[in-house]
Image 1 (cartoon, rainbow, N blue to C red):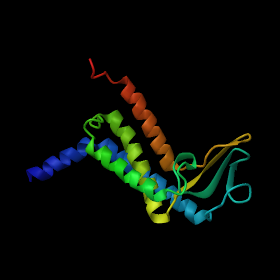
Image 2: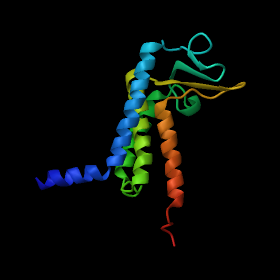
Image 3: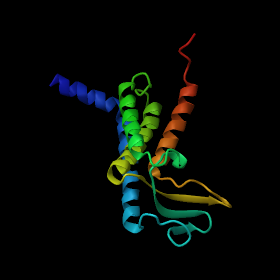
Length: 170
């Protein structure tokens, strides 16, 4: 009985991390499910995607076997293993990462949810489903998804948060 209570207390200590991880993961997977049912894979460009704002924002359906900006393209298995290692490392070093603090939990919740969302894609499809496509004049920003956004916001937020923390050296 005491073990169950302490397990519940440990889980609740990370409630912001868990809540945001689940929310980011769910939103990511629901949007990708919609894309999978709405557009065939490879739907891109003027006649393949859905034009939201002319010459600026499109909903498309592309598969990315690489990482951000299609770096390491074709290495989906290696990237899936890296995602698993990242999730394991976050769990292992959760105390030294400051995850008892709400701000760190929020950042890592987004990071974990996004990483898990893209990992599920790699395991289920062999690629990550990307669908948010922005054009800025002649420049086309790399297509991305909700998981990518969560990862980016989580990492940037954690960097900013950690820079504000008092230095332990000294």
